Length: 331
Image (cartoon, rainbow, N blue to C red):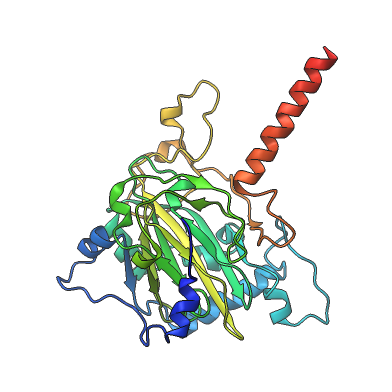
């Protein structure tokens, strides 16, 4: 989608909302609001003590105190905590190495909302720890079902704000109601330096004017549908962070084809089983769970994006074609 004005800068020039944009339920139904808008905000669901626990744990992870993971960066004794944190944008699967992160997959308030919008049986398959310091990029328009495909379209993100999330520091922006199409719009590589290496959704019937910023206080949780178009902008604040723990959930009754079929297995029954049950019963308990995902650092775009998204797939295809041509010539 062509961008003529930067909505973040435009909002800041106008002063932006002078309030934290937490929707008021007109009919008292969380599910009704979520189904109509594709998102819902639960204000200040975590206490200051809980937020401190999560932020302290984030630092331990970045220091390697919870284990070595792909992309872990070295640091020296001279580095401050801010020096260490500011080098990271996003760490995938922190719950795989931290009991504290695992605990926050299923707080009582989180589960209460999830069972209303998904159903009684809920499983979690992913967590992401965002540490967006000054100058770090946002993420272009996308839908989470592009990356985590559920059979029943029940994917739901639980976006826990560990700091106040504002327009200035790169809060979430959503297009209300965009999930209703039930369409996954085409993804293409983008080279906008406001965003990280993730591909961008294209061709959807909305403009920037349809998007709203979701400013929330620390401890609030933003729930959003896997088909809801959303993005974020860079952290343009002069100091501080926009830290977020994002967990992804779905109905435990649905298969999760987040892997290729195993030998002698139909594509239709492929089921990713590296999950954590957070509510109800697991109808597929007999499959047992697996340990598949490994914690890793997401590239920020600094130094190029050749190893991420469509760029990586394109490069791999080119190398495969080159190797095939070489074999043909030699043969």
